[in-house]
Length: 271
Ligand code: UTP
Image 1 (tube, rainbow, N blue to C red):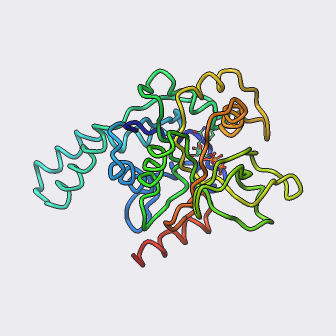
Image 2: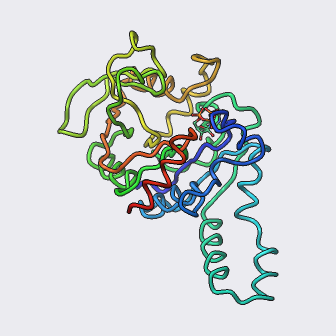
């Protein structure tokens, strides 16, 4: 069973500057609710019991959001507003399941994942990238079913425009399983249009094996001088570990850019 999830939150968020010069983008409201709460709700509904947040000192605001008990208690004592009581209860529910680890320098997603090494208990864990919202269908839940069926790692994926491949991790199919699931042959981080083996992009949901930590320890920075999780995944594939690409059926919302962030609210109000 997959009971633990990790969420890297220690990036700089440069695409959302100037907002991110003072604010954690994961707390920005999407239809009145912080983006990170959508991610936590997806985890809870998928049966996750513990979530590890990888943050940095610059992102301490995220920890504070879940640890503001004195403020809530004070206000609730003076003003018995049922809305505030309900919100506080929700925060407490999230807080109970979150652990925080720190990545001091944003050296890349691979380095961020490595920080969770000593907390991962089971053979496999879930990773969610908080910029990637998937609505209408719980992607993590579907991926956990696929993991159970194939006893493999799983990555969420979708077809992207050929001229946009350099924004994503792109994979090549080894064997088609059915219309929406594929065994992966190789994966490359942000390739040029020429280098891209296909237009199958990896989206921010991964079921990864604990053995990935041994790969991450030895990884050197690659594209853009960062340590990429994609390189560790390729190394596992080279050792014959099975990775399934799952074309999810929910709707993808890219909250990492201003255009995508604004659009996410417009899409969510429609549901
Ligand atoms: P990205 O590189 O896509 O986003 O990282 P970013 O760094 O947040 O924002 P931009 O690109 O500068 O606009 C994907 C995810 O991995 C986390 C980020 O917080 C984001 O959730 N991350 C990235 C880390 O936790 N540590 C890192 O060193 C790099």
